[in-house]
Length: 117
Length: 190
Image 1 (cartoon, rainbow over the protein chains, first blue to last red):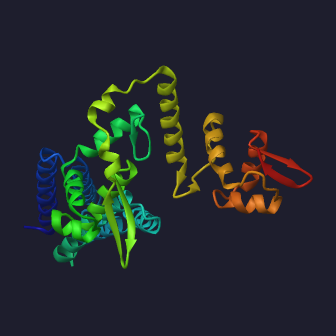
Image 2: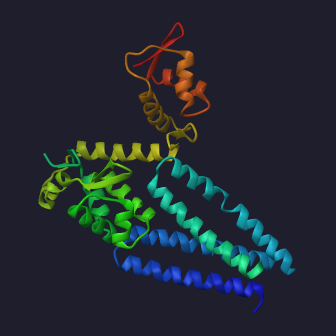
Image 3: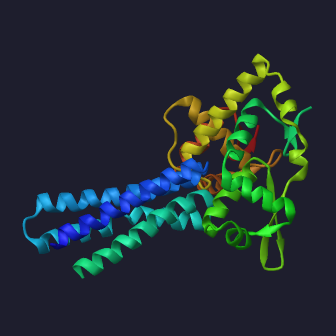
């Protein structure tokens, strides 16, 4: 299995698991936690799209890796700022939302390092 | 009078209350707090969810007046607002909403939406282009000025600068909207 396929499989698995968790939380009447899970699933989905875009835009595997890495560094900049702002202002609701995004990002970064390191 | 969290409960507040309570995790938190006051980590351990998620739910419960917090040594403890739950569901559904109070509620919701979209952590993101929205924003800013106090222009600028960098426009608009008055370089709230 190539690196792109392996990384795509990682995203497919995460998205499928997130959908399952979302449905379970909804069924358990935990709507807000379900929404947090949906946010997490959307983050995986965003980066799966970035991976697809890398495949389309670049033919060389190294160029695809650089394309993905650049986006992985650029896209979350606003999230980190939002997290710090929420933390500074004691905004527990926003903090939980931004934390979920950053946790998903950390998993993606780890998978990237493992697959493409 | 029907009361929740210390104030008369509007229909909108009743909806917020029901919406907030219709969540298993929040009900579990309330059940735990009904037994004893707890801090975030203890609740997280007890309910098997993360501490940030507990804080998230506690914020929502605090917003509707269902819980309150207090400091105890190193911990922020959370307690159930028992008096808030003294009201019965029958009391809530029997409360009548007249046209004037419904209109006031709609106005209140609109104001809240405008303030939420234009302010972020106390700072104004942008001066609204629409006059009605700008008026709401200015009414919020003018609260920073104590009634009956005379301010110099520099003091006015400094206070407004806490909200937005363009203090000149806001200062001028506060005067134009009759929220503040000016004479010989002195300013005061109307």
